[in-house]
Amino acid sequence: MTTTPRRIGVLTGGGDCPGLNAVLRSVTKHAIQSGLDVHGIEDGFLGLIENRVRDLRYDDVSGILKLGGTILGTSNKANPARFATGQAEDGTVTWEDVTADCFATIEEHGLEALVVIGGDGTMACAQPFAAAGIPVIGVPKTIDNDVHGTELTFGFQSAVEVATEALDRVHTTAESHGRALVVEVMGRNAGWIALHAGIAGGADVVLIPEIPFRLDHILEQIDWRTSIGRRSTVICVAEGACMEGGEQVIHTLDPTSPDPVKLGGIGEQIAHEIDSRSDVEARAVTLGHVQRGGSPVADDRVLGTLFGAHATRLLLDGAANRMVAWRHGAVGDVDITVPGQGQRTVPLDDPHVLAARSCYTTFGDEVPRKLREEARGRGPRGLLR
Image (cartoon, rainbow, N blue to C red; front, side, top):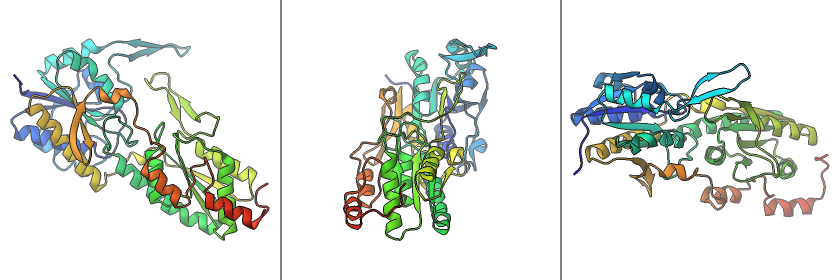
C-alpha cells in the first residue's frame, strides 16, 4: 500500500546553477495544487542541520521562473554524515556525523518526504534519509551535465550558452590582433560544456578531461591555420583537461570542503606555452562562476519545470527513493543510488566528438589527417620554434 505524504520539504544542495528556481516553482505549485504543505529548507542540508525551515506558499515562488540562483540558498559544505565542526590552527579539521540533528529537524516540522535538488553529492547526502524510511525524490542539477543516470541536467544548457557567447566574442578580438585565444570553462572530470560550447562557438581546438592532449598538436593546428591565411586560433579548454602524462592544474585547496581540490589555471598554462614556443601571441580568459550565474535559458526553464512536476507526481503516487531523469528524449526516473555509480563523462566515440573532428577541430590528441597531409605538401614554414 502506497502512502501520499501531506507535508514535504524541498532543498537545493551543492553549487548554484540556472534553473533551480524553475524546479522550486514547479514542485511547490504542483504540490500546493494537490493539497500538500511545502516547506523550504534553507541552504541545502545545512538548513536541516541548523533547523532553518520555512513555509513555501504560492506567492513565494510566483515570478521566480526567470531568476538565477536559488531563493532557498545552497551549500556545498554540508554533508550531514561528514560535517566540518571546527578547524585547528594547524589546519586540522574536525568532522562529525550530525545526521541526528537533521532527523530532529524533520520530526519537528512534521516532514514526511524530501525533494532534494542537486548533483551526485546531494544524492549521496540523501541516502541516510532514504535508508531511514523517509521518502526521498532527487532532481539532478549540475552545469557539468555529469550526473550518472540522466542524459541531461538543467543548468547545463545555460552554461553552454554563456560559454558559447564568450567564444563568439573572443573570435573577433583574436582575429583583430592575430592571436590565439584560450577560453577556460568549467568541467572537472567531464568535458560536456567545453565540447558543446566548442562546437557551437566554432573553436579550433577543444580540450576535455577525457582526452589527454599534447601541446605539439595544438601548435601544429595554429601553424596550419596561419599557413592558410587564418589570423586567429580559438581554444576551448575544460578546467579539468590535462596534458598527456601530466596532471590536472590545481587552483586552491579547501580542507573544510568534502571536495577540497579546486581546479583552474590550465588555460593560462596553455597560453604561456603557446607564447613561449611559437611566434603567435596568446591570451587566456577564464569564465569561472559566470557560467553558473544569470537567468536560465528557455530550455532550462522548461526542463526544470518538467523535472519539478515529475518529482511531485512521484510523491503523489507514493514513490520513494527515485531520481528524476531525462532518458531517451523523455522525463522518467531511476533509483536514487544510480548517481553514485560514477560520473557521466564524454565517451571517446560520442557523436559530438566525431562531428567536431570532421570539421577540422582537434582535441589535442592528434592532428587532423587532412591537415597533416597539407602540412607535408607545403613543407616547413618556420612558424614553430
